[in-house]
Length: 81
Ligand SMILES: [Zn+2]
Image (tube, rainbow, N blue to C red):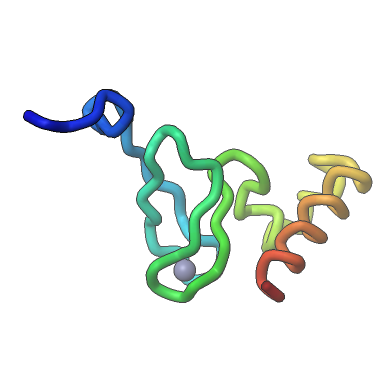
């Protein structure tokens, strides 16, 4: 109904990912990779950086130190924005 086909959002799927900071679910559309948490304004990544790495003691061994440092570093950068 007068909508540009490019703006047809019916094909988008929605998924929820917990915010690493406030733990509230953040709504992601299928074309979004990261979004700012509406509750605490923290950047939430859809696939990158599972939130468990922030509290799990085994995360460094699980991911390997290189990946761990990269993900933690990316999180810090986002929070300083
Ligand atoms: Zn949040």
